[in-house]
Length: 404
Image (cartoon, rainbow, N blue to C red; front, side, top):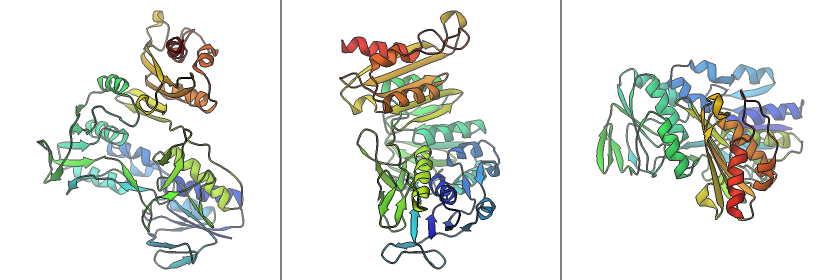
């Protein structure tokens, strides 16, 4: 069996690993247009902040070769699913194909001489430009934009962030949580700012904003050699003998919505499923609940599931400390969202332990738990670690009262 994998990101690199784990005999060929091997794209802001780029490479080309995976530093320019071939420097035949070509940066306005942060080469280009610059404008206040902005600030740059929406992190937080989060970060952010074009390091958005360099972080669009996006099922199956994984795919999430993949965690899990199935195994992806997290200016932020405006439901919010009052703990705000029947469908957190709180809420969402039951769940307690009734318990109790 000859398995060809196009792409070496979180999806493609992981697919190659699990294809080899599943079949010791399959011939596996991995195409990587970048040439660095599998690296952590989510760590690119750390490269901006001074980390060595070599440190974020998790599986270099030589590692794949040691696993008897043929590594080709080539860009695939076309795929012919009727003839079972891919074309890089030359045409290659496959028995099973895995497409994991990821996404490309989106730029919904006219722009010239701007930077992006999607690939390692982007981070290295930004690092080089930073040596000749003192100020930068970042367009977009999502995860990539804000993480990049913090990294640039860390290196002494004067940073201004422009955001089209009325609050930061619009895909992650409701407005009330975003406004609280914004108070926790020391950044200059201009909201409700519609960029029309960028030229000569000048951003035209009603008024003019000028800096020594401009970076665009306005999201991504799926990238497939022949265009479009790959729709896949839970087994990551796309066509006969073709699987697809990662940001080039569209899938059904836990709530039944068609979504394009944009999270490394989902891409890696899809890669595992695609690799196993392509090599003759049988695995399936749990429908994503879209858990997200970051840490900005030392503050943890996380979310999972539906946002408030995405459902006609009820929410409850806890704002206080992560410890009993007498222990002088850290600030913590937790919001939970339920449908009209009380079934938990979403959660957001800002503060100490936010990511682990969201992991707990994700488990409750997967099990379709009612806020009544979550509010009554036992939690670990010790004054130096956690209160008797923690933030999740209290927030769910608030929703329960509203429903009554």
